[in-house]
Image 1: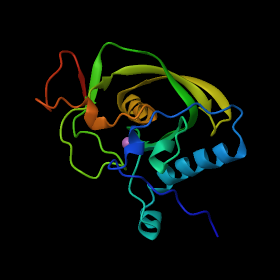
Image 2 (image 1 turned 135 degrees about the vertical axis):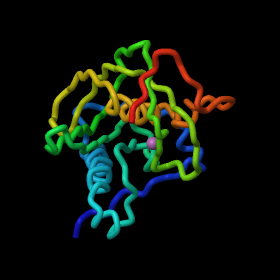
Image 3 (image 1 turned 180 degrees about the horizontal axis):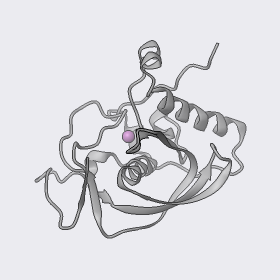
Length: 189
Ligand code: NI
């Protein structure tokens, strides 16, 4: 028998607004298991059979707080094809991730963002930094990492980092003008 999947808490629960606390590195067993289970949900949610069998929702990222645990941990997994049709995977399972620096230039997803915890529609552009530098302990490689990210990867990471501070993507959408154009911002398909 495999472990059950984590359950996702919706944004109607105020815990989603909590600020999560750092964890101790090296991770204890409980934290390792939680971080692994976050990653497993995201990765397995790309598999149609597992989605149907276990009721998973397709995801590219998940933060510990979305399972009700106020710890600074998150997992991302983006599977995409390069121009030659080769499968590429961008995957991290981070503890204590930090945003070290960012560009002034902004970017946003043209189709808007989604979130496993957000069931209502929130149309509009969630403005992010176009390029970021982050650090953190990555459980997948068992290394302290220091990464420069841009494009879609940078957006996914910022969405998950926001969860650790109780911020949801629609907080970043202009209420008065959800599709407001920002000078120089990069639109990501
Ligand atoms: Ni989310």
